[in-house]
Length: 84
Image (cartoon, rainbow, N blue to C red):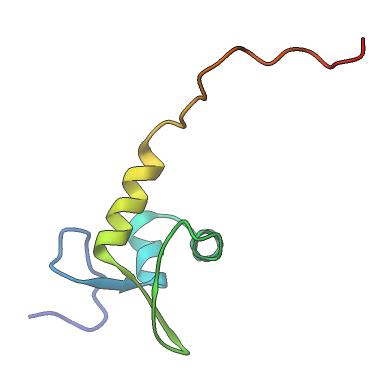
């Protein structure tokens, strides 16, 4: 039986987590998560004025993107400053 105070694990069959739960699951700070949300990198669903949740699929996709190394643009290396 589940207790309302239990924190879900990523493997749980849940559709979404509140931002505070995502912070506990991932080890990221709530401030960092809210910054990612504001920047549009972590999608959320606003259930009400006081309830914002992160869908499980969106969290998984966010973590996958964050785990990838940044892409380096192809092309010649940047040259020094102009005008020398």
